Image (cartoon, rainbow, N blue to C red; front, side):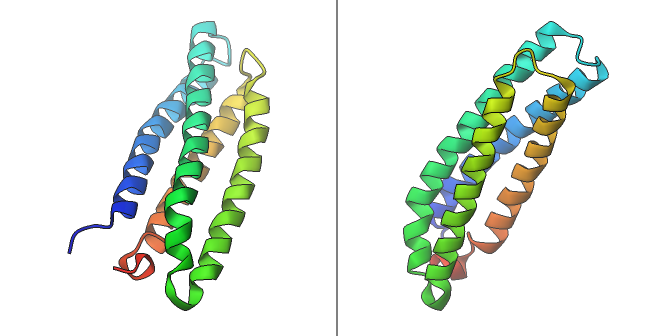
Length: 142
């Protein structure tokens, strides 16, 4: 049996974000080791952080477009799963808005570097949970 096109697209986006997450974490750690006193590194961290936030926002849009209708048709728990996805995405968008406001402070501070690292860990966890619990053959109706 071939993999679901919905799963394939979402996992491909997750893989792209994982790569960007690793870059942002590495930059944030280097920025911290420099005690926030490296303007070039701060500029790069700012740019890559904005890129991560933008990619995450676009991903949420696409995921909701692809996954929500599939979840709604996923048997007895389908509506519940779809509502959970919508609610989680709403909370994630609120977090994203907050973080974007914080990152708009330029140059980045050590606190913002730590926030980026925490956000990276949050994203990694959310993607793995989603892949394990929502992007399965039983939920996707395969």
